[in-house]
Image (tube, rainbow over the protein chains, first blue to last red):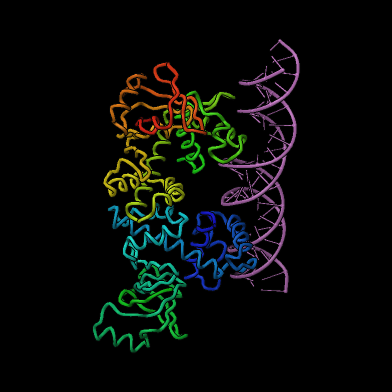
Length: 218
Length: 218
DNA sequence: AAATAAATTTAGACAAGACTAAAAATATTG
DNA sequence: CAATATTTTTAGTCTTGTCTAAATTTATTT
C-alpha cells in the first residue's frame, strides 16, 4: 500500500499534530524525521497527491482522514509489537523501540489482528501509551501528568495525584476542575514552572502543581 | 547491514545452488527473482563488490562464505517466523509465506535469538524445512522423498517409506543403499519416472520407486 | 514600511534498484 | 567450422527518496 518512508512521515505528522494543531511546519517535521526541510517538502507533495495530507504551500501540513487512519494503524502495530517484545520475548521496555520501528511496517491485516488476539488485546504498550483497536479507536485515554506536556501541547484535566484538601482548594481557587482543557503556553526550564491557559485565562503554576494534575490527551 | 533486495538475492542464490552447483546462471536467478536478466547482472555486480558472491562474467555466480552465512540467517529468520505464525498465531501453513518474506528482513540478532528461544528452538518449519541454529548449522537433514527432487538436484539416500521385502530386494538388485548419493538427471512429467545417477551408473526408476525412497539434502 | 531574518520551496544532482533495447559473448547446429 | 540461437552484459532511462545551493515567501525588527 504505502512505503516505509510514507508511513514514517504520516506517523511523525500524527504525533506532531498534538503540539501543532494549526498545522505541522516543514521544519518541525524535518527535525522529527532527522532530515532536511527540502526533503520534507518533496515528500509532503507526494502525500498530498495521494490525499493522505492536506497541504498549502508555506502553511504547514495536516493529516486527511485517510492519512490519520493510516497513521493510527502504524502506531497500533508499533505498540502491539513493543508489547509482544516485552511480554513474550523478555525484552526491556527501553530496548524495543528500534525493532518496533521496523516491525510496524509489516503489511498484513490478519497478522495485526492475530497478534492483538494472541497478546490478549492489550490497552497500553510497555511505555504506558494507549494501543488503538482494529478500528483505530483509543479505548483508554493517554493519561499523563500535566508536567509531562511540552510547550503548545494540550490536554483535558482528568484527575489529581495529590488529593489533599490543600491541593484541591488551590485548584478550586484557580478555577481548575475536571473536564477543563489546559494548554501549555510556556515551560520554564529553570524551575519547571509553566504558563498555562484554562478557559481563556492565563495562569503560571509551579512544578509541584503540574506534577500532581493528571490530564488526558488525544 | 544489507538491503532487503540484497538479502533476497542472496537467499535466491542459496536455494538455487542446490540445483546448480557449478554456479547459478543469470537467467535462473532472474526467473527466481521474477525480474529481468539485466537487473540481475546489475545486482550481482554490487554483491560481488561487497564480497558476498564470487562472480566472473558469463560464468554464473556462487555465494562467498560471507554470502552463505548471510543467506542462512535470512532463511533462519524466515522459517522461525513461519513457525511463529502457525504455532502461536493460528495461521495455516499455506498462508504464512508472504508475511515471512517481510519478517525475514527485520534486523536484530537479539530478536531472532529470543524468538527462537520463545518457540522452543524448533528444528523444522511448518513445511518440514529445517531451521538452522544461531550459528547457521542445520541440525536435521532436509529429509524428503526422492520424488520431490527436481531435475539436477541431488541428495543422499537415508531411508525407505515402503519397507516391504519386495521393495528392499529391488533396491538391492539395483545397488541402491543408505548413504549413497543420488542425482536426478531427468524427470518425465508424463509418468513421473526419473533418470537418476547413482555411483556413476544411470538408472531409470518409476514414480512408485521415487515415492518410497527418503533422501536428505544440504 | 523598509530592511533583515527565518522558514520554505525550487532546481538540479545523486544512489539504489529496476527496466528496455542493443551489443557482445557463449552455445548449438547444420 | 561457419551460421544461427541463446544467454549475458552494457548503455541509457526511470522512480523513490534524499541532498545542497539558490530563490522565494513569510515573519520580525528597527
